[in-house]
Length: 316
Image 1 (cartoon, helix red, strand yellow):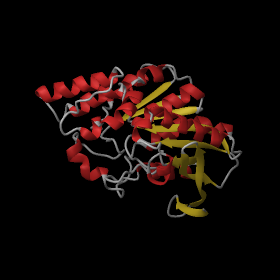
Image 2 (image 1 turned 90 degrees about the horizontal axis):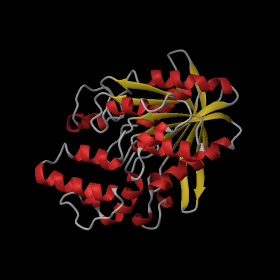
Image 3 (image 1 turned 90 degrees about the vertical axis):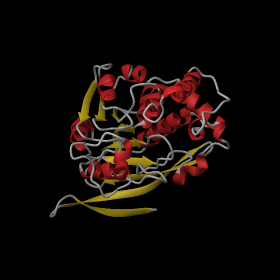
């Protein structure tokens, strides 16, 4: 389906944007996405969004949480002359049919390859100049791996991405909910998975995280270290964190940025994991924000992103 959308830039100025539903064919099924292109100008740099963990779709939403963070970011980017591609991950929303036959067959590397394939797809299209990735949360590591292993991007933006391997991050997150022997037990299980070993005894109440069918995916994810990946990235990159992000500490952005001479770092004061303004520091106190798509993006989020992207416009 192809259609045209009018996006209001101000009370007096409008810009015409071409929007197209696009499909990427894979061995296990089709991935679906939305491509948006400013109609003015010739070739445009294109920004590919890479979603975070769980059933997160192209807009940044999942069945429990709707905040439209990617959709809102995309609108700003298109208004400023960048094409964007947002896609549903395999197994999610309109890309549900691309999931492997069983959950046990799912690998973190599938997500990486999908991003590489989308990047190659855009590079074959004559409408775009350079390709930049934006990876949010889990997607931060996915994008790093796609950039390093196959040269998927000319520039990269990590958004609220952890600095530690995921089993360490899970320890930190679960440490906010558990204590004593229960926490020690969970940490022991996470260490086993982090070392590549499946576990049989599932911690009570945490079946959604440790169920047997998801363990191969966790192990495939836990083997990658964001610090190692950012250290070897050889393209311009911007690392953004939020000071009130209750899922990934804003300090993680600084840690990653110190490992690469080509990194720019921005820790945005009072920004949370879904890119909104809040002074609250706990997830529980932020839950209403997570599910309110009417809330605007943090007012200081797009400034460093647009400043970073300006270097790619000269290649139109």
